[in-house]
Every structure is written in structure tokens, then in C-alpha cells.
Figure (cartoon, rainbow, N blue to C red):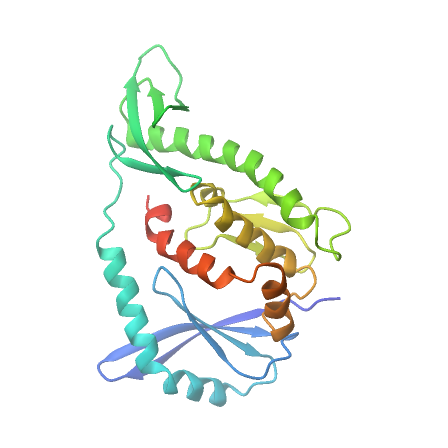
Length: 249
């Protein structure tokens, strides 16, 4: 039986700044070092084995405080240039890594729905209400994601010996995560991932499938990821670079 990870919140001072981070305890983590991640939304996540003393974790974070501060500020600077959507014709949208334009068609007799039409993703709506247009787009992305993810999951899982049958999956809109794998082996995927290129989708699927074998971020987990996608780091970097635009509401 796998033990659920525990997450706690902590603060450390760095000059005139306060660095806030989430500490994720991983009972099954075999690597003793502390791993520090700065997420695309500027949040700081720290992974540590269950046996690590809190004082040691805090010391490790303090030693990397300058690096953390630089990456947090860079992430915030990127986010500052991302304007909220107005859901008007001409706005840029993404699907499978390609750029499309939003076309809003108001028809008082029609129900709200989105369709792809050439270089446009067209939303027909009975009124020009941003919330209604967004809901139509979300429904369209969810349906596309259901189809694309099913196809890619089968393809990515096929060469993996430990995957005897495809795991249960569900779709859930999330603000910062692409996907997750529960201790029971159920995979949750963000429908917004379908906005990204296929190789990015494949990376996220492989990442979660590797968690069926190693439900942690241990050295064994990364060796498995390396073996099945040697260029995953470059793909992840590309994916992270798209995050602020993909997640923008």
C-alpha cells in the first residue's frame, strides 16, 4: 500500500524578500537530497524524503535562496506580460501547438458552441457574454482533449512493460498542473494540455505513466523517464514556456 504525500507551507527570509514554498514529503522517496522547483506560475515547490529533518530542508532552501529568487522573479516578469482574455474576435488561441484566431458570431437563435473552421476557432453565441464564450471554448477543449488523450495514451503506454492495461483517467481543469497520478493509479489530466504540441502531451502522459511504476520523483523514476524519452527535459522546458499563455483565463 502506497503512502499519501504530505504537503506543508513554509516561509524563509532572503534579504528584503520572503520566500514562500510548499514542502512535499514523499515517504517512498529514496533519494536523500532535497529537490527545489520553481513552477511556471512562480510558486516554489520543495520535494524531500519523509526522513529529512525540517531544519535540514530549511537550510537547503536557504542555500538556494538566490537561485530561487531569480527564477521566481523571472516567472513573475513573464506573467506580467500576459493580459487576461476579453473573448473577442481576433484573440489568439492554441490547439495542438498551433495558433488559431477566435471568431465570435452572435446569433440570438443559436446555442453557445465552438467549432474549428480553418484558421479560426469560431464560437457561436446568443449574446456576446465573455463567460458564455469561455464556457463554450472550455467544452470544446474538453471534448478535443478526451479524443486526443485517449489516442496518445494508448500509443505512449504501448511499449511500457509495466502497463498491463490502460489506467483510469479523468479530465479536470487546473490552474497550474498538467496532470497527476493518484496512489491508486488514476491519472488526472488538464484538458488545457490539448493546446500544446503532441510531444508535450506525450511527455505529460509518460510522466504520469512512470508514476505507476515509481510513485515518487526518485532517481529510478527519472531513469525510467530518460529511457523512454531521452529528450524529455527539452520538451518540459518548451511546455513550461507555454504555461502562462495556456493557463491564462
